Structure formats: C-alpha cells, structure tokens
Length: 451
Image 1 (tube, rainbow, N blue to C red):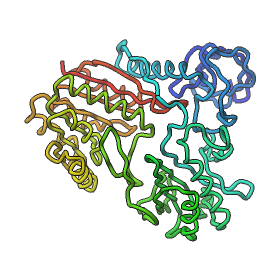
Image 2: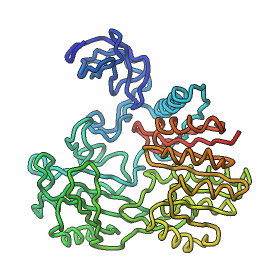
Image 3: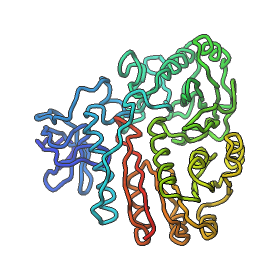
C-alpha cells in the first residue's frame, strides 16, 4: 500500500476523532468525513507502519445519518468535524467514544449513559480564538483547515457570512476588526518569516458583553482608538485588550496582557453566582451545558448529604461558590496565588466567605492531610485536557475521600486516570455531555465511590 492507491471500502467502525475506519490489506485506514456502514472509493494519502489515512473520491453508499450541512465549508474548515451528521447520530457516536475509551483502558464492560444533548446545537460557542492572515490582500480570520495553518475565513462560512456555531454577535466584532486592520494598514503575522504584528483575535461573549483581545508580535498596537470608536458606533458593550506574544510558539496568548479600554475583567453569572472573567480566565465554552453539569453535581451533594466538598483545580472558585449552595463546607485548592486572592474576593462578593476555605498549594500535597480531618467528603476534579498529575491520583488513593466526581473534556486521559483509581473505587455512573455540538469533542462526568 502506498499514497495514491485507490480502494473501494466499507466503514466498519468509528475512530476517536469521529472519522470512519476501514480495513484494507491488513491495514487500518482512517477516512475523515465518513460514517459507519458507508461504502466509498478512497485514495490513500499517508501510510504508516500498520495504519493509513485516506480521502473519499466517491461516496457509493451513504448512511441514513448523513445530512446536508448548513455550512458549505464544513469539509474545509477545521471548526466542526460533525456538521454533516444528524444530531442524534452525533450523540450516539460520542457515547460510544467514551465507552470504548473506558472499556479498552480499564478492561471492563462499562455502562455509559446516553449523551446529554446541548439545549443549543447552533450559536452556542461563547469564545473564539482566530488566527489572522491576509488572503488576496485582505485581512481574514477563521479556523485552520485540517492539518494545515491555512485560515478558512469565518466571514464566508455558514449562513449570512458567519459561523453557525459561534454565539450571535461575535462575527460582527470579527468583521469590524478585520475592516479596521485593512483601513489602518496594519501588518499581520507570517509564521515562516516570524514577521508582522497581529497574530490572533480572541473574542469572548459574556451575557451581552464582549471581551476582545488582540494578540500581537510587538510591544504596542497602533490606531487602536479608531477600533474602539468603530465598536462603540456599532453599539457593542466591550472591553479591549492587547496581549504581547513574540515567541515562536503555538500558544496563543502571551505573558503580558494590557487593558486598552473598559474593565480588567467582565462580570458574568452562572447559576446565581456572579464572577469576573479576565482574558486569561478559563470558562466552559457552552454556558447552558456547563450549568447542567454543575447543577447535577449540586444535586449529588444534596441527595447524598455530603458535608465537605473539595474543589481541586479550583481556579478563582466559580464552582466552589456553586457547590456552597449545597454543601456545609467547601475547600478550594489552587496553586496560583493570584487566583486564590481573586477567589477569596469572589466568595465574599457572593456571601460565601464563611463556607469556602481557600488553600493555596499543590493538590498532591494538600489533599491527604485535608481529607484526613474530614468526615464525609467529595472531591471534584476538573483538570485540563492532559488529565490529572499522577501525584494527585496517588494522593487521592492515600486520602480516601468518600466519593470522587471527575469532569473531563478528554475521554482518553479520563479513562487512563480512572483506571488508576479502580482498585479502591467503583464507578457509579458515566455521563457524556455534549458541550461541543458538531465537533469531535465531548465532556464527560464520572462518579466514583469508595469500595
């Protein structure tokens, strides 16, 4: 088998990224944008030792789950891998992805709940991070085409020139920004030469307010007051920031961020908890699904009469304040000192200063002595995509909390970490939540109880 070879195949399974999988001449072949049961003529694009990649030349038999996507660029843009699949089928694909990861990693036949659907399947994404480039002399912003650094302009996506996944209003900000770039004759960053000023535009919508951050390869942004005037004229309520990033890296934001207009943080609300969101703050991308997950955790605390809740990786304590509505005591562990300071102020502002204790330190070190002093305890883990540090998992086994709730956006690292805990804990439930409709990503919540 070599690149350029053509084969007629039938898709007999689905891969981790939602792509179709076929078997040809002993090779596993991954074929993006194909569905289970479909037949197609494919062309091999890349060959590895025991597997290969291919693209569809002709679709011979289509799945009943295949639909006409509402965006003509969905096969070119890397922002929505599943837009051509019916929503019901997407939910089942994601449930199976979670189950397969857990079964394979843990060596069990795990029952996984049906994927909880998002209340909004379009216009749910409250934040975009768009690389900026020039095409045909015009500034453009959008997502990279798959496996490239070629920008697919969001202004030509979907209906009426806007991405169908982004929250209403975001594309308007993007369009004003791009027009301002052209009118101001400001250069954009080029990766090969590492020259040019503007690298990314990051826009987050919080309620009806917008946090707008321009990432630059330089020390200052010229003509930004003109941009402020244009956004004001368009009647946007916003704060404008600039982030300096001169490094040759895929990390978007730089180490230095300056507020050019508005407030250092924008006030938001989740389940009655008011909080401030800075440019660097992490927030879930789908507000309604976030609230569904946090409400579920609150009900578990309430129904099981949990007195002590430990919010590991607590950040500024948004979840801690939500959990304080249900638990007698909440312990928020965070290693970043500034986040702890912000968390203390947030708890006070929400009337929870007497219920939340903030601990500045490493979870691996702080968990065992804390849990040893508590009666009935629940630890909530919501780590980054890479999963939990091994030392944190070891500390959990040493500390032996009554229950653990693990929330993750990466089924592979979630399954790996859960396997480590299964000697002392048993799975009570596994529930996928569709935080990211029309993409390959899935949020999962696993509840574990000490044996």
